[in-house]
Length: 191
Image (cartoon, rainbow, N blue to C red; front, side, top):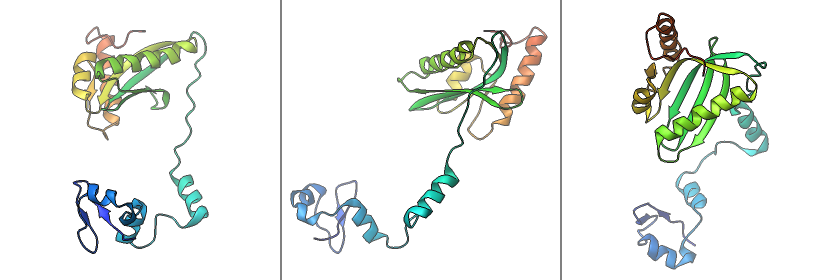
């Protein structure tokens, strides 16, 4: 058996060029598992050695667990909405004034970022209302590939390239002040 690395364009390399992927696949005795081919091409230490290192790696990079807020019946949940309109999914969060994440909602894309975002808003609101509370939106920020169209459709306060999170809250504070003075798009309303 020979180690052969097959490129995506169908050509291969190794000690000598062996033909296209179809030709190589026709003679399965010439094909090794991809992991073996990669190991042969890139000898050396792997990411971890053994179970103890793997467990330590997983512990170090484990996402912290999330517990949604538990508002009391009749409470008004005052929050900023953050929406990430991505190509494969849309994600939303409700962020308290103290920057605590109150609720999250995740939606696989159905091909329409506007409808996906409507579904996310409905999911966030359903979580708040499911606790017997009402939602007061203080501001809206968008990010992701659909950020600009969502900003326009939602009359959002900010459309940000990912990584500028603090700007959403400050934009929302300014929007809330404008709403309190009778100016703006009405994001201060209880919905």
